[in-house]
Image 1: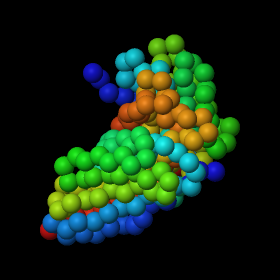
Image 2 (image 1 turned 180 degrees about the vertical axis):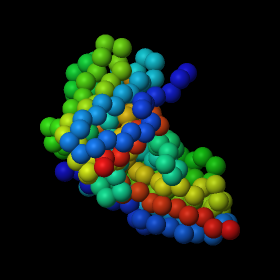
Image 3 (image 1 turned 60 degrees about the vertical axis):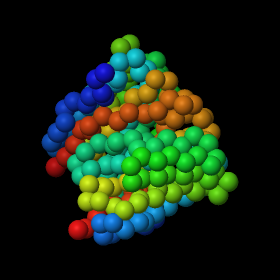
Image 4 (image 1 turned 135 degrees about the vertical axis):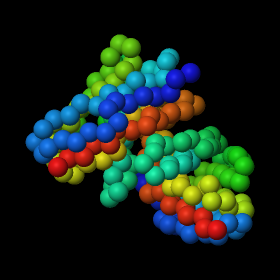
Length: 114
Length: 114
């Protein structure tokens, strides 16, 4: 069974640009969550999508957005990039995201903003 | 706001020694997760603790959960170099009960020396 995949794995962008990251969940999983990991703030929850709807949202500015497609693949977008957006972005998938549904993490996308 | 604290933040230990990592969280939650992260890599699930008094063991690692004390421990027995990594505990969202919105601890960087 294939794991969670994320593309691209590495990305370098300039301040002010926008970026789109992609996440393909494990087959059959309908919930996709996104996390940001930085040395200063640690691992922080961004948002979660389930059945193409945003079900949970963390405390991030509106520059961070996402969506989920009918095949459960998810994308997150960051507009007007800032230096502080440099981070490892992890997505995780689970069957339903509730109760006993365990999350499985992808390899991450490392974003560098210069 | 749910807060998750780990200590110590950094742990240097010799091979063969025992040690415990502590994870305290601030609100009621019945489920706690332990993850391992190697440098530059994603998160690997170690344990899922689902109820008060839960204890799980895998190799040299043993995790336990005390929901009344809001405390989980990760005990390392006879450490070996391969255990060197950063260990995170995480708690699911107590308000929605969803396991897809995790709050992570600060992480404990474990270094096992020969």
